[in-house]
Image 1 (cartoon, rainbow, N blue to C red):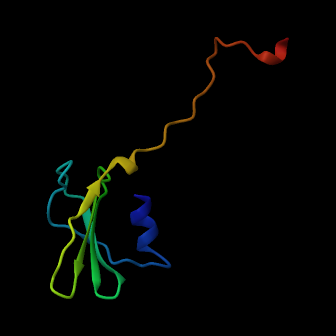
Image 2: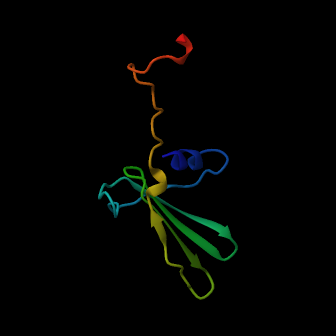
Image 3: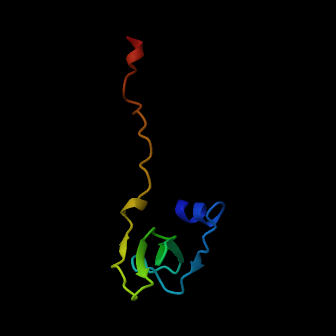
Length: 96
């Protein structure tokens, strides 16, 4: 979600578009895609599901139409673990 929000505004202003297909992982219809050009002659197709965080990135080369196998996954989208709080049963060390 952060990637989508941060890249939609200043300074990147990526033109994310709603994908008319369901996500490969969660089958929700909340996936968005964008085409970018990371370097001359290379185009990148990026897909992001806002439901489960599944992402897919593939590169297409203008010369000869060569394509790279897309890289996909969602492991990096796991939310951070909440901070652990001390149990009420634990004694304070300061009382000694």
